[in-house]
Length: 261
Image (cartoon, rainbow, N blue to C red; front, top):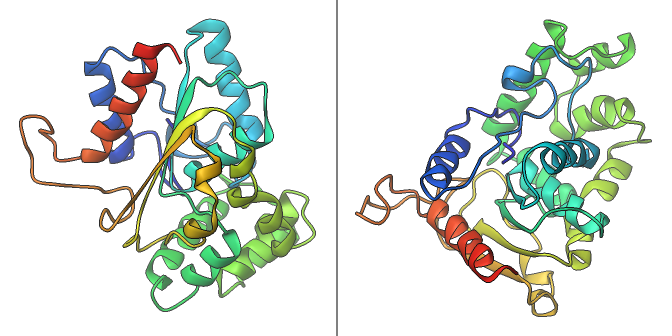
């Protein structure tokens, strides 16, 4: 299980899914992206939405040390990361996956987060990065560190900090390479992708442009409501915590376990 931007392994949606999965007999690993949560201080750098090598390293560890049956769940930023990972690799060890509220097109996602509607979230995310940079948790070259405190938009931050730090020419090249919408048609493994029309952080831009009928092995849910990794309802005996998202994901994984496919 992998959290979203500036989340941690202790993010409520990850903990909730893990608690429910444990009750169904699954073993769970909640992964921290670089310099997030309890992973702070173990890396000089940071993460990005296309850094699939880190996902591969964790999966290789699980395969070698723990289990040969692996189900991968990503949320928000990492929902996109999971889709990119699965689309660019054919010989991975993942049996099935879930992807919740993925940013599909990073260009459109950035335009939204820089708009009036997304300003609250943009300021929150950038503030989190700047705090880590100021406290030297994220260590940048002097020029990029200076840039980090001069940018006014999310696009500028990616253009002048994120992209050059990870070896991209600019934000345009970074977004082009990392937008998961490019990789979804190449995914060959079973999975479920869940999004909400009222997502206030990453609306499902380009959802209808994806030829889902050509991907029968991928189940999709585009809910009218659900917010951003929320998907809440009134508690019931079947869903005592009110998070119907957990039930959807785990029911899907259970089907794969029972069928062996």
